[in-house]
Image (cartoon, rainbow, N blue to C red; front, side, top):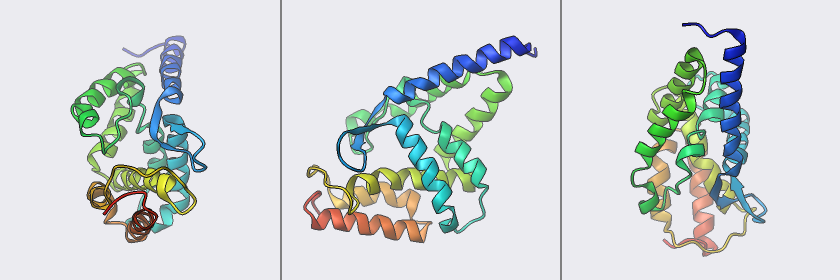
Length: 198
């Protein structure tokens, strides 16, 4: 049954209010100057901007607008599921199930047509089932590594190995030669500076 304009608007603003919670989800990595940890809303904005700027380095044709849409919604599940560092095995355990439930809870706040559309785009990101979903995942994988360990950054040493970082990132970045080369430079620089071990 079609919602009336007032009911549709109410549903949309319920979703938007819930999405505001993304500003309160603190991530493991810092902002570029190292002064504090970034929140997930800041991460979302930054990866969307990165995708817009770096789209020319995608070797397959993409709809940049669709990539941006995917990135704007890709972490909304963290409002209910929280953020889990990919290097924290305990935190990652069960994260996929938590995010599935969080996606259902978040997107069901919307009118049905928008719920279906956003859930589908979120799924494209998770499954890397489209060119846009794959590129969004690649930029999302590169962003925290570059931001946290790039030449501009001076974080404290982490109990991580370069091998583990590359194992986690290669799967989503290896199809993007320019971005993958940047990843390798960032990881090697972090290794040379003693921020991670071999």
